[in-house]
Image (cartoon, rainbow, N blue to C red; front, side, top):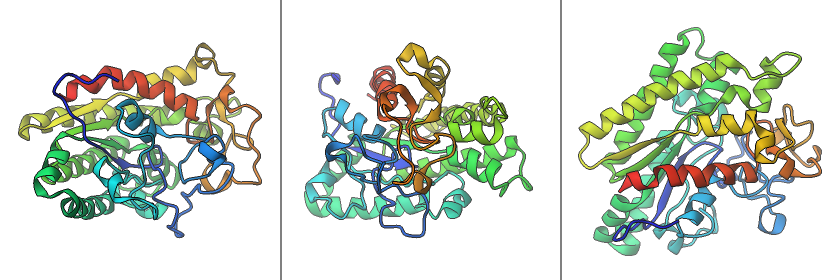
Length: 333
């Protein structure tokens, strides 16, 4: 992708959940949100399961590749990470995490505040590597991406009912936005300026929710989608307010809800044969530890929008990332 003249994006730094996680949960034995085993990674280079929640690359990888930075975005907690990797960016995202601290706790994932602690450690390492001035330049010019919210709505609110007693959907989405806003202010204080925040997806249309809530014909669960849409409208307004109040902040709302919904609903138009089941096992409930060597994958993942019952396939991610970057990238500069 061509960047405007005189514009530099030295690194990409990612926070969030399993959509972006490139392996941070691999050594976290407390969590079930792990996938460093087959059939995950079956289409990754060498067919290796790396802890990416998919059959191949995830959006973190496609984004750094599109920007010409590097081929893959390493997990910060990867034991093989090299000092040179730090200079061009890393991923702090953790499968199972959410804006609501309770979400990460339920999943034993690295919470957003835990991800900020790792980011602070990363900044110290970077200063030792390249000095304070270059570190400040990297932080001010890099692109930071945040993907979160799905697990709050699907797991914490609806599935576990952990928040339903205290909150209705309007007040719960307020809690999510407050938490998102505090997180963004914190990374801003630490030096981040160009920050892209992805919307919540149409979570009611992922195979797992269709199986659990969609009845015999496995329709999309509209109350889940309505919660996503309500959260998204509040998030978008909050980002506009942060941009007004924080000098030099470029916080962009990146809509993934509508493009992903279009792929799921009009899957044939995009060259898929199956839009409502994942490729792994039956495709109806398998994800993370349930998608394992005992649940054989489909014959041809290219026919499927989803890899497992929660996560899109590599080809679906690829179809999403390019247009989103084309649409929003220039607004960072």
